[in-house]
Structures are given as structure tokens and as C-alpha cells.
Length: 161
Image (cartoon, rainbow, N blue to C red; front, side):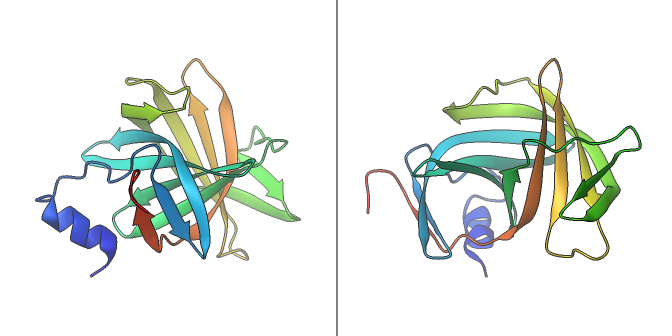
């Protein structure tokens, strides 16, 4: 059983976030600090989106059950009117779409409880390792990121090393 499955089962199936600002995550031998936690909900699913910093680098991850996804911004990327995007010489097209609402916030983030976003997931058949995430925040920015599976090796809660 994975650490996430074990945690969820001990919490009786509830999925409150196991992360707090100040916690440290060890991923692939690198230690990251949790700077923010945004809890998002779509239908009956709820998951944490966690801001991580290491030096000057900031990334975001989502944790949904055993699935951990790392997101890195593609600042100059723009999705065309045809909802496609070309990145690294490959064209990515929409394979999923939906919306979610922010239900809780902790730490350094511009998100607020009640914020809503729509998302697009863009994939390319020749790139099974990456996909593109497009989030359009109501009344706010559009964020484009590259996404890939990731793994959390260890969680070090704040105040304990």
C-alpha cells in the first residue's frame, strides 16, 4: 500500500490534505519546501494542489490518491483558438476538460476559497511522459504548464526533521 493510500485509509476515506506550509517533501533525492496548499474540488472529488519551492525555483504538484503530478510553468506558451499548443516541436490537443472550485487555502498564494477555474488537458500521442495543463481562472489569468508524473519519497512535517 502506498503512503497516500495508507494515509487516506487511516483518515476513514476523508481526503483532507496531509500537507501544510513549512513541511518538506523529498522527491527524487531533492528536498522541497511547501509554500502553499490549495484544496480543489470537482464534483465529489477533492485533492490538494501544493506549491513547492527549492531555492529560487517554484513548482506545483497535485496529489489525487496515488497519482502525483508535477507542473512547471510554460510562461510564453499560448493555446490557439483551435485549442492546440505546440511545445518542443510537438502539437498537443485537448483530451480532457472540466472545472473545479477552491475549497481551502493555506500559505503564500493568490487563490481564495470560492475561486473557480476551468481546465484543459492537452496530450500528444508521441509524448507519453508529458502533457499540457491549461487553467483559466474566472476573472483572472490563464496559466499554462507542462505536467508529468512525479513521486513523493518522504514527507517531513514542519517542526520535525
